[in-house]
Image (cartoon, rainbow, N blue to C red; front, side, top):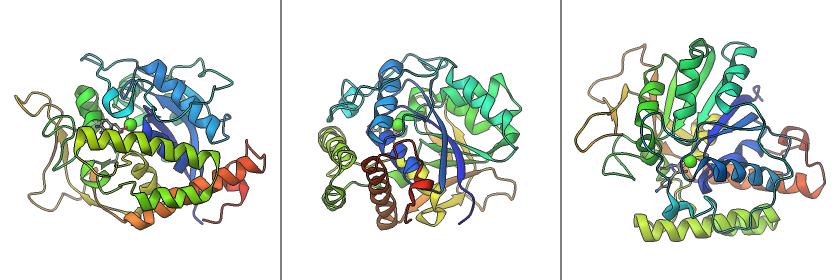
Length: 332
Ligand code: PIR
Ligand code: CA
């Protein structure tokens, strides 16, 4: 197996962020260096606590959590209680974390990790508004050429979910998104076009139920709330587990098809603020740094998620709580 991808996950958990964390911890192809949090689905305090609680459920309280930006660069905070509930993770009992977040600010953590590592080795994965990544690029511009890749759940080239054309993560902090999309690092946008294919169907839940573990129950509780929210507010039958698609792409790019296309973020349109504008008119230039995810292998994706949940469940059951998936003998 090739060396594992070393990532920092910048997130706002969030039902689908929680699944992204499970997938990152339960697959040996990923090494999760730390989690940074950003105000988005709920306020920063709630989101940060949720990240800590999810790590309790995963048996991985050794993973550092650093709180980042509490609000967007320019605009007011906008949260999504109708989708994620008052806690940000409604639908389950959240376990009490035995610790709080680290002292160091999330933006500082990102910079320190990237500057200390071999250039080209750390991948930044963002599944919330892009405030922390934008601040990091401004505070320490040298990170831009040292980062291996930025993988963003956000945007969409055909679809919006918060406005007709804007996706929530970009809409909340479009100025930050514009900074991140404009920097010289390679960037992969895993937008709604892709993530709306990652539906947690009844069959998926059945497979997780068969794992028969507290973490499996946790997943099912989360998906139950998320499904109802998506039925009531988005007209879906099943909820799309957006954020986990970023991790699946890194584990096995064959599961997430991508295509190169230049992207920009709309900041001033009368009806289009927060839109990610993709230029499909001609084949992208050789030096195009952007790619968008287009097609998901649904079966392959859910195989990875179910496998990760069973790996983490087995590790917790055998008491090797601090062990990573890599040393718990994952069969993946
Ligand atoms: C999901 C989100 C916000 C709003 C809705 N309707 C659904 C969150 C998810 O956590 C994901 O990162 C992204 N924002 C999808 O828009
Ligand atoms: Ca999210």
